[in-house]
Length: 423
Image 1: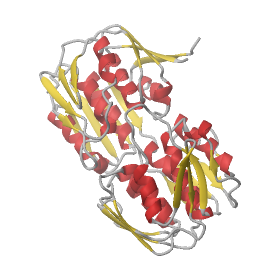
Image 2 (image 1 turned 45 degrees about the vertical axis):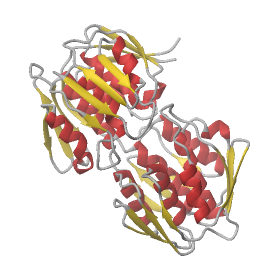
Image 3 (image 1 turned 60 degrees about the vertical axis):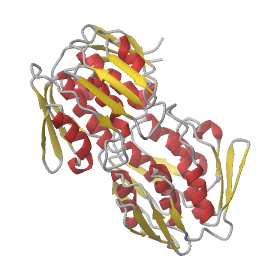
């Protein structure tokens, strides 16, 4: 099993090109099941998760052409060969569950394993299933599989989510594009990735209004066409590298970003005393290593609030801040698993339920640590880059799920970070 070794203490300077958004790309891959025509996706990030999705799509009958290093994926599925998504594939990653809606919409039935993924809470799929039931599907859960049928087609419905759910909003929107009649999604999530998915579907011929607001209206159509579409830049990756530079000091320009999707993160960095300059498609992050990082409290919230997917990274930064910062995790339970590992590096963190109190220390020290989930793993990279001595991070397959060429991007800016092949 691979490990990452880091020698801390280097400032970072240079430019980093941000990859396509994982959280959008995966759902766009699932959306390709909605049409019999070829789809081309550019700026497609090469990640373990997007590769897992390709494996599943090929199982269902999709032909995928994705030259390594090209960022260009072509999919084509003139005929669905299978409507069964097996446990061995779906267990690897939660997002693969999102093939259920497109299969149900296009074929009228599907059998999909209940999902797996990161161990950051239960994240049940009941809202997804209730949305499909409202659209006329019969749902049975049996032997760990969801068996869904709408043999006469899905029907438009008025769906009010009891709480904001990104996954349920995306999934219901995908299915509703081919439903008969109008669908209204209320209390919908407003994340930029939902807007990106909606824009792609609209370009394919879907009729969608209100994406990015709490009410989304979809008028069903009988078919969708192929598309050539560029995946939105990854605001989570951009927020991660912004936290990295804020911690190490130096000056880095993040290229190919959409700054307006990152308001809460950039505001928190400014409050921490970090230099933030934005342009149409770039963000410049700068900090004099001799300057003080100010403690900042963080409450994770649905967009446009502070994203839960940047909570661990910002905590990595706050471990060396001047003062005490309080983190309240309001989206997922069990998402402070990085705290014990950060403590191994000398961080002073106390966790009580959904709240973590971080007392900044003057210096972290390198140690052997272990990644526990995707975002937690990169918080350890941030801490390792500022720690004295060597830090070794195990289980870095978590990192590979969501960060493309992480070590190379950091090395190009002056970081001392290498991957060591597992024995």
